[in-house]
Length: 128
Figure: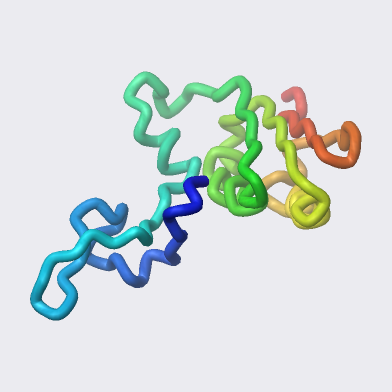
């Protein structure tokens, strides 16, 4: 994550959902440093080589504190069982939040997870 940019819930950019055109403030167009980042579901859905029946083999999530948000943004692919394995590396502050998320849908009942060393999770789709 670039420290020069802040995240947005999308409300400030209703007419510019991915924050590409800037805003008009006091009659002048200005470039804003706040943008709505796309979820991982949105990024994967935009890949033209990834067809609707394809499964993503492996995703690594290491994001300096945003790991719970990233996993939340992967919920559509997880619910559709389109991710085979995810490795999450997170700090102590995010570890508990990630662990709680993995106990709820869409991760349960379709996925298992292992805690490796207090900083890493391996999340795997259960065999069919």
